[in-house]
Amino acid sequence: MTLEIEDLRVRFGGVRPLDGVTLTFSAGLCGLIGPNGAGKTTLFNVLSGFVRPASGTVTAGGTDLLRLAPHRRARWGLRRTFQQEQVVAELSAAANLRLAADHLGGGEEGLLGFCGLEDPGRPAGELTLLERRRLELARALVGTPRIVLLDEPAAGLSEAESRELATLLQAVPEKFDALVVLIEHDVGLVAEVCASTAVLDFGRLVALGPTAQVLADPAVRAAYLGEAP
Ligand SMILES: Nc1ncnc2c1ncn2[C@@H]1O[C@H](COP(=O)(O)OP(=O)(O)OP(=O)(O)O)[C@@H](O)[C@H]1O
Ligand SMILES: [Mg+2]
Image 1 (cartoon, rainbow, N blue to C red):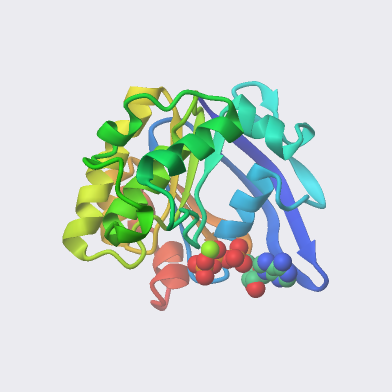
Image 2: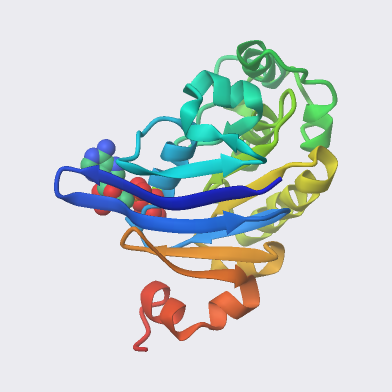
């Protein structure tokens, strides 16, 4: 599965959160990094249909995604999680998953186990943060996910918990034959689990390629790590 993004532009009044972004995510687990306000979440919003771009195209496995209504993108296999948690605290983990499965018209079998949630009957509100993040991932994998967009799933987790979640994320592309894009502020984590990474800054692509190479790029270090070029 490849995701090809071509000259994407988004304007909110005078703000240009995406200012002509062209990039291709090819396969596996891909990183998407950049400073606060760089446009990362806006890119996910365009891909999932929350925000309509002023111009640009998005092609996923030969399908013109922007021409599909948001719910049809979901049926096609586009999944996302949000920076703000989406699980329903009063419902059990299993009921939360079923809700997503009903909504998307897809299967949910084995997903809680795959995501490492041992006790499906517990209310989501009683789960730890890591367990809730596992549940959110499970919700994003119902049916036939083809592209899975994860917006800072490791935020707020300890380093050990982040590594645990990252190990799980690494297993997703092969098991589901899906492309996973991971927004993450912990560059060390991205370096560990993402073979390729894209860097945004002020709505523009700064670098794209093998993660180690990207992180060593002086333009990236200047933009993202605040170092002088
Ligand atoms: N609905 C909106 N109306 C106006 N401006 C917006 C809107 N959504 C985002 N922006 C602006 O667009 C820019 C990019 O925001 P975005 O949320 O995409 O950044 P981000 O890279 O996800 O940052 P963070 O790492 O903090 O989550 C910011 O300047 C933000 O204030
Ligand atoms: Mg964001």
